[in-house]
Image (cartoon, rainbow, N blue to C red):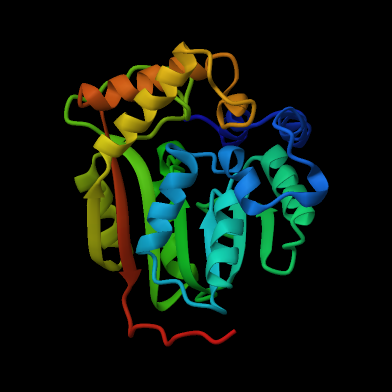
Length: 284
């Protein structure tokens, strides 16, 4: 089984913040006047990036003043976006040290330290007490999670009764045997894909209810193809998630598209909730 350290190193090593600052300079984005939108091309480190975050947020019943948890928060882009959009507080946790460091520095540049708090930690062993959060979400993290029952049980534990859980992931497709490298794994190590039906079963076992699963493969396939078309024209922007994926970025994108097209992976979005009465609307 691949260690958490190996998976963390896969996502980010070295001076990630410096890499982003350099890209911001090339994109003519001054640090002293950055906005959430300026950072959006690079700080939503998951498939489809910022548009996928917006789409998930559209489905989440977040209210002003609530406390939300982002498991596997990466660079903190989704956390900052939700905090600004809904006027809520967001805590984030991630196993990748350079991402956590960069996330907090970017949050500081935006002056959002009062709304967004990010720390290093593992979604399979969350550093929070029971029933802390009004809602929890995770975006394209579970592909690297070896103990999915523990991950879902922890999300359930830290939720208040009636709180929501949102999830996006690349599930295992009917054909299986994905092509590598892909963004979450170079060679298949550290990759723990399960089918959408297995994800549903694991959520039910954890205690979640009102589970709604949406197939998102067509949207992801279109996005991957659009990115590849830009790359083929030499039109990739200086600021984008591709700068974090390294020299194999294009190969990872091509394989991601091919896996969906061939039925080897099955992207989904899931919304469910912890058993209990619906939470009252929070007040700011």
